[in-house]
Amino acid sequence: MELEKAIGLGVAGNFAGHLKQAGEAADFAHLRITDENSPKGVFPFYLPGAPGHRLGQFPVSHDRIVLPEGGGNVQIEPEVALICDLVYEGKKVSAVVPRRFAAYNDCSIRRPGARKISEKKNWGISTKGLSRDWIDIDRFARGGVMDSYRIASYLYRDGRLHTYGIDSPVLGYGYFYEGLQRWLVEKLNSQQDEGPLECIGDLLALAQWPRWAVISAGATRYTEFGETNFLVPGDESIVVVYDGVRQDHRDIEAMLTGGGRAGPSDGISVLRQKVAGG
View (tube, helix red, strand yellow):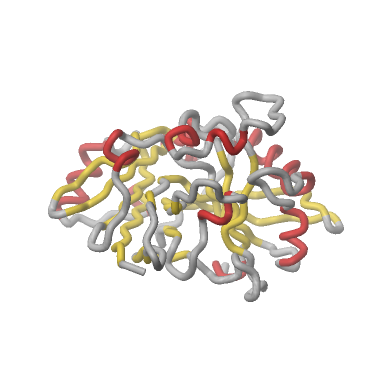
């Protein structure tokens, strides 16, 4: 799959407490949400085949984050990304089929008063992160490979490794597996332009009904350090998705500081990005 041909979508509010920490909870206060555990909506971060659109520039990098010109508060958003097939019936999405997963950084600029979530998500090349370590999904359901995976994130600054996000199980998402698939199909077909959200159906049409999607499942909560420290040039952003049966956080930290290398065969997807000024 060519990533440049996949639409980039994110799930907002799928991990309890993250929106409040990010200062975004108020943006969704007026939306009618029938299930308090459900995510708040879907947002776009990249539209393939739409070079003139503000989201038309491919933002994903596996090794670099470029900060916005003119500055701004930018944070790591540690997530798991699902690399999916999109299936259509006519001009409606009939299925979202996750095939692989990887560590993902939904790197975001904090822009109080931004009209849409997507305005905080893509400000040019190398403004998002996706690991090259893709792990195959045997089945996207309980009992599958993803059951035991966890999401961890760190910031390497001035020779020290700081824990940036709270180490969290993938199954800590509010919606996952079949519930997330059903919810995504419904939202891709029905979500309207309202508040911080956009009509995803219109964007799928603009992208000429892409066959693939990279879907970030939602950001975990921050540690106190992560909530109060923004990226600066010279930092290194790190997100790790790992099998919690085969490793624990101490193993991951030892690997990151000791110069070790691991990959999908070890049950690990690693994303390390150097931070550069805009």
